[in-house]
Image (tube, rainbow, N blue to C red; front, side):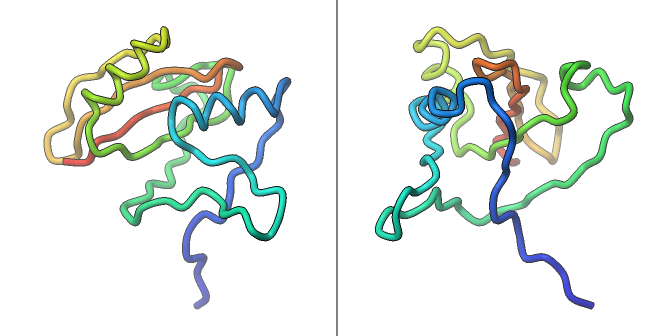
Length: 119
């Protein structure tokens, strides 16, 4: 059986696509979409990727959003400090033994984001 080998991209609508792309680049280090063949796209480090459909009434992330982005980080404390220094509200969650540490925030358009430092 053929299987996909990973995510090749994540595409979504935004009210201010250029501004939002800049926010992700500035605060999370996600390179914007290349505009020519010489500019490299965002290259991620290898690691676990969780694909998890949630119940439609979940309260784990914003009720008015259909999805939440989850990004792996090496140092959750440093990332949280960096985001808070930029004036971004971040909620650190309790550690999940054997799984890792998590924090929640939202981008300027309200998209829920989870930061995950694997155990």
